[in-house]
Each structure stands twice: as C-alpha cells, then as structure tokens.
Amino acid sequence: MSSSERLRRLLALVPYVINRSSVSVEEAAAAFGVTEKQIIDDLNLLWCVELRAPDPYCPIDLSYEGGEIVVCEAESISRPLRLDVDEAAALLVALRTIAEIPEHGDAVSQVIAKLEVAAGTAARPSSQVAVQLDVRPDVLVQVQSGLDQDRRLRMTYYVPGRDENTVRDVDPMRLLIVDGWSYLEGWCRRAEAVRLFRLDRIVDLQVLDVTARIPDEAEPLDLDAGLFRPSPEDVRVTFELSAAGRWVADHYPCESIAELGEGRVRVVLRTRDVRWVRRLALRLAGTGRIVEPAELAAQVREDAARALKLYDA
Amino acid sequence: MSRRKTERLLNLVVCLLATRRYLTAEQIRQAVPGYPGGDEAFKRMFERDKEELRELGIPLEMGSDGDEEPGYRIQRQAYELPEIQLARDEAAVLGLAARVWQRASLAEAASGALLKLRAAGVDTDEAASLGIEPRVGTDEPAFPALWRAVRDRRPVTFEYQGVGRSGPQRRHLEPWGVVSRHGRWYVAGHDRDRGEARVFRLSRIRGEVVADGAAGTITVPEGVDLRQVVTSMGGPAPGRRTATVRLRHGAADGIRRWAANIRADDDDWDLAELTFAEVDRLADYLAGFADDVVVVEPPDVRDAMIQHLKAVCQ
Image: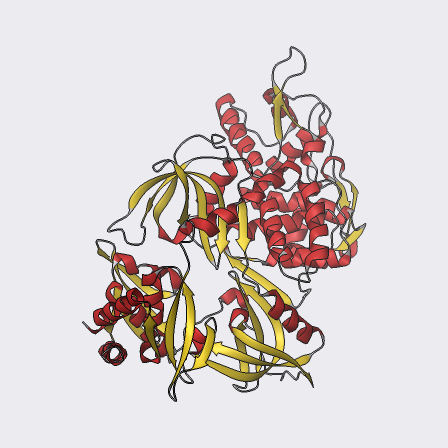
C-alpha cells in the first residue's frame, strides 16, 4: 500500500464515521476493503496528528472503545475531499452510459445532475469520453418484462456460426451489456445450461405465460473473468493476413499475433465451432488465408469451388 | 518509512486546512512534525510532499497576505466535497455505475470516487442488482495516456498501423476525446499531419503515446459531437444500390435477416433483394455463405463475386 493510497483512506475514514455518528470497526473495515487491524492502525495514526506551532495541539479526537468508532473532534478534515477529474469522469461516463438503456433513465439522470453539481469543474472533462451502446430497445424492453415477471421466453435466435435460426425456450437471469453489446443471460432449456444470447441476434421473442424455473446449479457468469473463455475442445486455426486483412486481429480475440513485415500478420484464433472460421476465410479471399489446419484450408477451397460452379451456367 | 511519510502528509494537510493565512515554508516546518533539520533536506522533502498532495487532488494554494513572504494554504471550500444526498434507488444506480469499468485506470478512479461519496454519507449498496449489468473494458494499453492527454488538453504523437498499410506511421494528433463503440476504443481529434478531423482505433497504436506539446494548448471545437465524429468516420455513405440474389431454400438465414422481397424462385431457390453501398464489401460478405447464395444482378457485383471466389480457390 503506497502512502498516498493510505492518506486517501485516512481522509475519507474520518468523515465516514462523522456522517454516521458511530461505526463499528468491523463495518469500517468492510466499507474500505481492509482488515480490522488496518482500521485500528489508521485510527491510531489519526489520533496522533499534532501541530506544534504556534501552540502545540492535537486537532483530532476519537475513540474506538468496544469496537465502536466515535470521532469527537476533527474540524478541518470532517468533510471528504472533492472528486478529482478522473473520479468524476469514471462515474459520470458510466452513468451516462447506463442512461442510454431504456427504462433505467429516471434515477440515473437524477444522480448525474447531483454528481455534476458536487464535482463542479472536475466534471467537465468527462464529456470527452463516450461509450456507445448497441441496444435494441424493442427486444430489451420485452426481455426486461420477462425478467421482472419471472416469465419464460421463447425466442428465435440466429446462430452466425451455423447460419441458422434456432427456436428455444430460455428462463431469463440477467441482462448484460458488455463492451457495447447487449446480452441476455439465461437458462437455455434446450442446452440445459447457462447461455448468453446477443439481443441483436434475437429474430423473434415471445414472453410466455409460464413461470421461469432456474435450477440451483445455474451459475451466473463471472463478468470480471471475461465473457468468452477458451475451452479444451477448442480448435486452433492459424491465419496469415495481408495488410488489408489486419482488421481480423482487431475483430476477434486472438491467442497470438505475429508481425510478418510489410503490414502482414500471422494470428492464431481459437474456436469451438470451425464453421464460422470457414466463413471468415471465404470472406477474406486474397486478404487472408488459413495455413493450419490444412484440412480446413482445403475445405474452404472446396466451398469456394462449389459456389463458383453456380456461375458457370 | 511509509507510515512516517503518511503521518507527515496528514499533518501537513490538517495544518494547511486549519490556517486562513498563507503559511511560509518555514512556518510549516515549525508546525508540522517530521521534517528534517537541514535546510536542503527540508526543501527537497517539502517539494515532494507538495507534489504528492497535488496528485491526490488536494487544492494546494500558493499566495501571500499583503507584502508578506509567499506561502501556502488549502481553502476548505476548494477542498471539501459539497453536500450530496441520494435516494435509495439513486444510490443503487451509483453502485452499478462504479462496476461498469473493468480493471485498469477508470475502475480505480471509480472506486476512489465511491469511497469519497460513502465518506460523505451516501450508502451505496454494492450488491444491489437492477437486473442489468453493463461492463466496459479499458485495457487497451494506449487508453491511460490518451485519456490523460484529452483531460489535460495536450497534443500527442504515436505510431499507427493502419489497415492496408505496409508499416506503422508516425501521427500527430490534438485529441478531442475517446469513444467506445461496439467494444472498441477510438480517439478522435485534429490530425496535424492531414490538417483535418480524424479517428484512430486504439488497438492499432503501436508503442507509447507521448506528449507532443504543452498541456492546455488544445481547443476542442465548439459543438463537436464525439460519437458523431466516430460514427461517420467512414466518410459520407455513397449512393445506395440494389442487388438481386438467389438464396438456397432453407439456408442463408443470415442474409434473410436483412433481405427484402423474399419470394420462391423454384423448388430449390428463393429470390431476394439486397441494398448495398460498396460492391467489394457486398461480395466479401456474400462469399461467406458459399454455395447458399448466387448473385443474379447487377453484373458488376456478379463479376466481383466470381473474382472473389476464384481468389479463394487459388
């Protein structure tokens, strides 16, 4: 822990207690995400604050008898420090992003207005960061009502890898908006597993008159670990891309990216379903080709040859 | 060591907040315990401490009362977070907002902000769920440096590997803002090399983003809509045209999602119309559907398709 991080906490701890009259050591430790021992150490440090001139005095008086913290005197540091530009931006940009989600607007605009006032001039640079969401308001509102009423959803869902519309029943768990795309997380009754459905791929949606039943073993995804995780069954596919095909490296998560010079690049993608990789190779043509596995490269050439035959007539 | 420094900085903050008059460096040295005796050592340590306070966002003010020697103070009004009261549902929204940023710079800033708001008496419920969880990643290596440049209104320079370029190029930019779209970060600004507004994708920046001038030297043009700049970066959309395609019956669902006027042609094929702007992009896209699609007309799209498929066979 750096001394500036600790100073930040000390300056917040005093007003935290003052604003709640008294706080237990346990509660303070939980609120600041540190151990109780650390909080007691902080309190001792605060209690030791002294100024020597012109007359020596100790401006902070507090106690934590019986594990209950009470601040009797703190004068100048009784209020927390203002938000700095980064802090104001982190919250305001996030709030403005949430404000774009239908049906979540009212409370959000209130908070934005209050925070802008509280942050003052520090709020200004926050307008220079924007997050654009890709929400489909119609689908989102339907999914939201399914969630609110605990109803099962029946959807026609487009699976790009298979180029197929599939019909399935899903018991909704959460709406997720990750990196600009919105998803429904739910218990898919066909797969009997938790699945993510991108809202822009839902072709048709009905809220059924059936109560959703989510089994106990349905674990919500840990968002902080990322939405897509490699699996042992994945196939590794190596592509060589020309300078014009480099966009693939931006577009899909790559296991490795190696520069080949002249703007060319070799990437390794992992996939559970090689069908979309075949499609990708067909789209790339001269700007990128599969080098491994060789069978997959051969399949792509056969796909193209079959398609070409249709133009012979 | 660290504890003594924290203690000294805390004493310094309390001392400068308690005074109405500006305190000279010497007065501060008398009042705040923990400074060394030697003049040079004190000066060095005091300089570092002032810098630390500024980095924490503490508004350290320098000035003098009348003709006295210049000194320092912190005005309470500039230091204190104003009163803020949030209703329960508003506090829940705030907790949600603080979770939006994944890892990295803004995530840290968000938890710092939450700490101060809690200290101001706001009870945020971290576990509160509104049934919706937005997340935005900021783990692009170029993000922190570009955000600092935008914030401080400072021009920057970086190496940029554009698509279709044989190597990275050095670019000089007056950044106006950063925008996330479809999960990718862009920086928009005035391109000094091209003399016009340009957008760069952060993932294509190679190496460090470095300062290319002083802070405060950029003016963001009045009324610039960052999202607009990023959305329209492909230039004005060229004229729209229509192509007629055959789709294999029961297949090519991806194309059917946006095709118009789908009707049966014979037992195996349907006919459909597609609106497009660029011939090559349409051909690239349709090629992905292999032998589930055939272009009927116009002839230039049909030719582009044939050339494209031939290139795959080679």
